[in-house]
Image 1 (cartoon, rainbow, N blue to C red):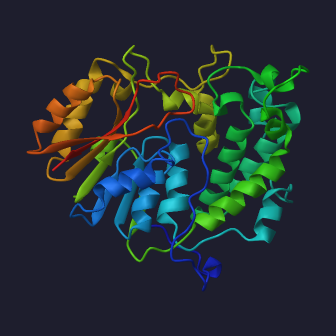
Image 2 (image 1 turned 45 degrees about the vertical axis):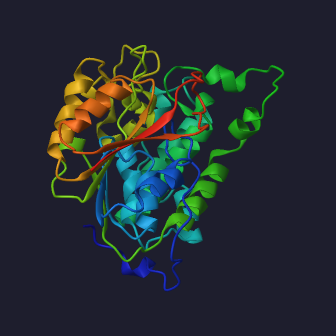
Length: 357
């Protein structure tokens, strides 16, 4: 567990925080309340969010007074877990935010984003601002302050991106002088410092102490140590057509920022949009995912297993139920009525919650 900076402790903490809005694909922010309704009567106190993502479900469990462990494979998501789940006291002051927005004496500012991503995602001036801001964030001594600031930087980057993704080189969509019938241009044109300050405020409002242990970590979901009364699983989704949601690809720019020092060594320089080199991942393979689920269920078979899923995925709903039944005596299948993901065009797909007890 990290050491907290006692100089940042507040004597007036809310009992529960306010989870910030998110633009992350597949986020369960709008479903967290419904998920909690389905599991609130289960007998558990310790829980693991094995694929933490935006932290929406882990945060809801923290609000409910549970002892929560957040885990995610991506370093950029791990920063979210540190800022919103593990952090219970630390906030960023107005003076600290002002300092993060300015060049500081004695700091040598690199130009990696400017040199590498020109005309890909952001303007030259915006790239320079990103280099400056991530360098200031990395100079912070308190890990929770750093995580809060990284969260705000990542959200600012997302909100200024078409589709909130980094899957292709498409800065021209922002800059084209064409008549528009939607309001994204106003969002895109709002300066980075404004968005950064906005998301700092949102992150600060989310910080609270639940009275129970909370921990964030980064790694393979199957390699998380310890025992948990309940394990929540929201793995990457593969559609029935075999198309996977590859978060490592979609958010590679944010992942690079999280590993700024070693970023150059991991870029696929052959790609036009400077994505990170691909990594083998069974959760994005329509053949390997069956074994991945089976191994994960076996690993946590002593825990209550709660799986968020979509009815049109691979494995099929029936196949996933059968996998769960290998390890759990009872499997309940619950559907969320009327929920539709923002970027989904499949109107027949339903959000499903599988509960194995």
